[in-house]
Image 1 (cartoon, rainbow, N blue to C red):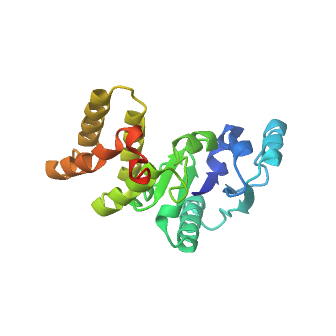
Image 2 (image 1 turned 90 degrees about the vertical axis):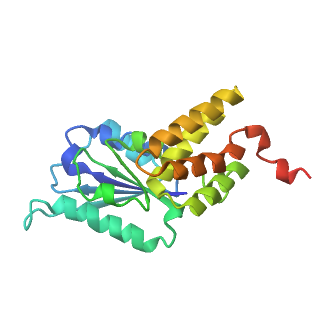
Image 3 (image 1 turned 60 degrees about the horizontal axis):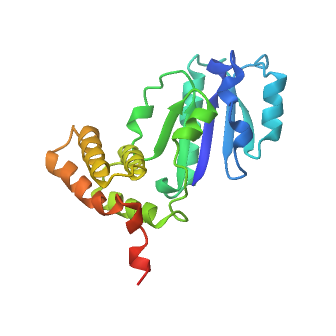
Length: 216
């Protein structure tokens, strides 16, 4: 899965930690560092991490001469730019690195969108595997969720819950945790939808069942 990081350096420049984790990114990752002044300082230790990074890094100057909210517009512009170049919303994840509360972020539920204050935190919550080349259960999970149509942000939370349950040794505990978590995540929707989600996921709870269809 492709990963994009939009770094609002204007609001986080007072602590270079916002770029922590950039040194661990891969060639497939793209980082846009948005800044509004040449006085934006980067420490020597952070420069070493930037230089060590394999990611594609772009530095973009955002002028505030016309509008004080220029950074918000710039974030929105690059989100639109990234969204336009990616034909399939399931193929990428986008992280906004900022401590600002941009009002338009919660409305974009059809993409894998994450808001964090550091790159390392964003990486920890973003999908870790490419669904196309991942395990058999990941592919089945994606197919099930596409059929249910519950939205990408909610799908990500359900994925985390299922992944955590699968790490539990006891089968009864796995099932109980998954049903409780699904009910909690879907508490704003009809109960029959929550039940449908849980019933659809039950075959994926046991890691031992992942490749049974392929062992014939």
